[in-house]
Length: 158
Image (cartoon, one colour):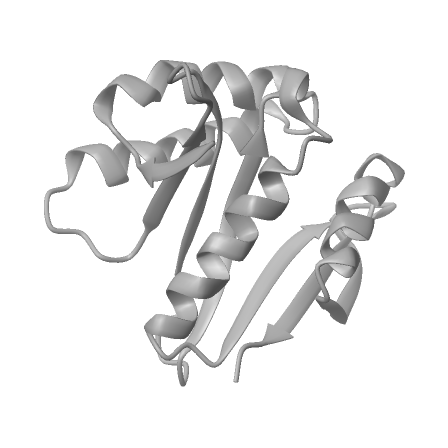
């Protein structure tokens, strides 16, 4: 597997991956694509950092998007992560998170935050972050919808 920067020809395969995961609503996919378009089309932007993971044959298998939290002391957000459903369970998400953490340590980041949903469909996602040594730092009940809390995970990098 190779982790690399996002390229223009990744746009449609990423859209396909986001759709096929079955986790994201159409509105969430629209937001993810808006950020992907910013990353691809706004030269010199530094708000969002994108990395893609591909196999030895060059097939795109997933991506992540992260950025520094404005007005914070070296805190960063993981905004999006998605792995092709056919490739889930192979350690690709873990590899991307570890790559991001190493990059952030080089940037002297202090903390990483990750927001996700509290609905039952996201149980595996929440376990994934816990396995990567993130802790649940906050939970806002019924944030996204009734029965769908906003769950914020955090990890100190210092």
